[in-house]
Image (cartoon, rainbow, N blue to C red; front, top):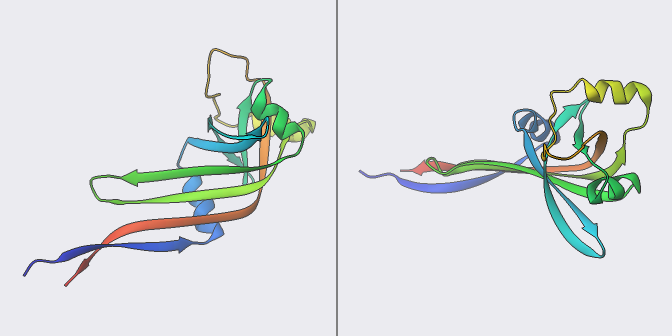
Length: 141
């Protein structure tokens, strides 16, 4: 007897979402620039549950410095198994200026997305809303 496969979607809790982020090096920051939405890839790391990335002077940095709300998304999908997950974080971003926090951020294993520029600023996103979803295949007998 053949088993039918069906996709199941599961909501993920905050702790599960943040745990999934720990193993992924690249995410996407969504923000508004000149009244238009943009999505930019960044390498990131977690620092006490906050999301940190490096940035050069420019759009990502300017919006973060202004204290805008941004969205941050990370996902992982295994095509062979038709399963994966997606996590979205929303909150206020800011440029790290506190000396102690900056030293801790600099100690993270964090390379900037674009290596040809000077990404000497560290941006922190403090998660306010954290949502996630997992999709997986289950056999129906």
